[in-house]
Image (tube, rainbow, N blue to C red; front, side, top):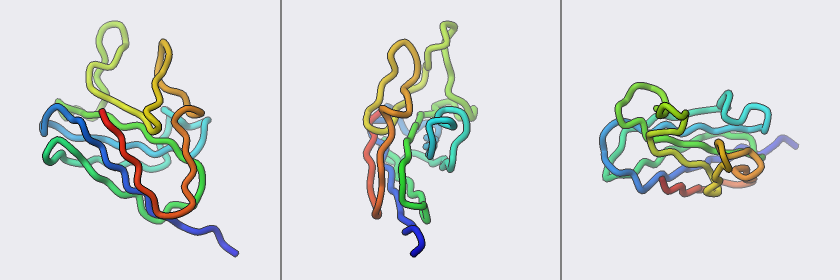
Length: 120
């Protein structure tokens, strides 16, 4: 019996403006979290929100990060202290302590078509 493929819909809300784009990164392991996305989608913003769908995913464990690239320069801008100056978030509302969120706090399991909501 082969593993079931699923669809994951990600709704990102709470954006301050429709300016720029939103990037949603999907990770499938602790070792690649915040380093190399398993899949990613970039989307324009409508009505201060974005909805993207990852199709044909193997059922399993994942984590998501997303950020609002307001100036559309293709990266999460940071200030002189290295702290992000553009809004960002992770699945499960995971927050970092003195740094970025960690995989164990952001991870979730999907076994069927699912929807995740993230508020920036």
